[in-house]
Length: 394
Image (tube, rainbow, N blue to C red):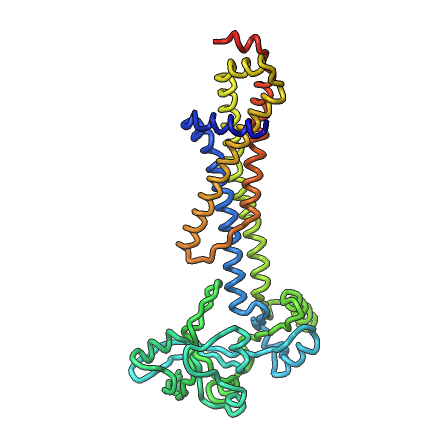
């Protein structure tokens, strides 16, 4: 009987193609909207997470601010002191940075010069296009060597490799540095770029370029067994205990950015999906109206079937199956359109596409439930028709 109801439903759909198409329109739009919104929300979260993980998610950055210098907390002993007082820290790397003019012959560019330890590159997941990174021995010996960003290398050395050449870093006076490496171009989701930076050993910066009164920031790497957000909270608690409240420092953790962006995108996706879901309800009302019209048009057919012994439950099942197949068919088309729209938007934005299979299954099941819910009343009305009255109608 169930298979017979499916055959009757399909026959009715193909017999009234225009009516079927119009009744499916709301369902298709609703399902496509829900699937596209949830897929794109998933893709945004996935791409943010992916980018921040590449940038080094398992780290915390401390930036001294305001009157921090007067507290004398951020001195040369701070890395050791912090590791003793906060669990889960692998390394604490001081960074010094300032803007300088960079020259090669007649080519002059302005760039950020960063004094860092050799482990800074690994902590920030930086890789080389050419050459090599400076080493711990370069830092100990205060060698005047540097690693520069790819765009800066291209601008200073447009016709040749920068590795093995000298650049001058100058403000009031000029000092020559040997380029030993060129970084591979890399931008993260937050807009940070290393393409126009010059990295030199930390001790070289302090002793040969500019004395460091207080580091510009500290990069705190977290061990693999500890959560970066937990360490960030512990650092904040420790610094407040020794410095008191005030604008003496700022903490930044990519992990906290990931968590916050996931929460925001989840809320936004849910909100937009609810709005898109309204069209599913509207589509369900359209299905109900079409089914009521179908009941009126097929009154005599219903009367004949009842006169031949068809039970009310059989008639009701037929119309319920018909409305469910209608919405299921619309749901499948909507899913295909929604996935297609997601792919087009992701391709245009140069994102990796993350398909939300939960959204696909939800849309399919919900479209079937819409068919059952809004098809119930027309099906019950068809089942309740009196056969004598139905046969007497024109």
